[in-house]
Image 1 (cartoon, rainbow, N blue to C red):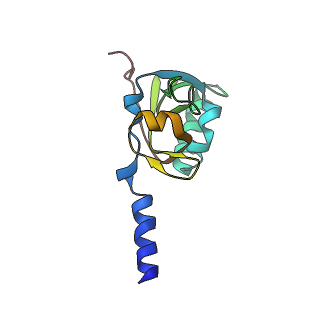
Image 2 (cartoon, helix red, strand yellow):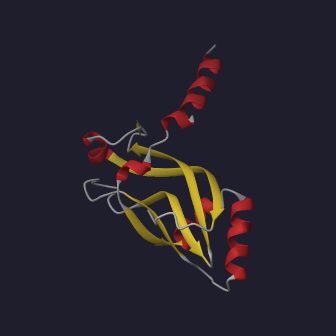
Length: 140
């Protein structure tokens, strides 16, 4: 019974239902593709597609845009998170991921609150999903 409860806790703790909606942060910020390489490395296919696109355009690295935690976030202010958009040649690589925001004790914040802004100290990105498009995602 105890083992079963532990297994359920692990599944609930890693469920996308607790993913933080970064699109509500309301700010974008630029970063180099090197800075999001840990996310690329979570998917061998994503990493290969990205490196191939760089090779085809004869680039070593590109600038990407990501969502940015505003300055009100005491520990996370300025940090960038998915979704990301990287302009490579004539294409855009859009990368989404499950984002998990936690405090020092591992407590998960599911949405933006004053408490989250004061206490959140860590962000994790998992399960990258991506698409290629010829359309500029920021050209509203």
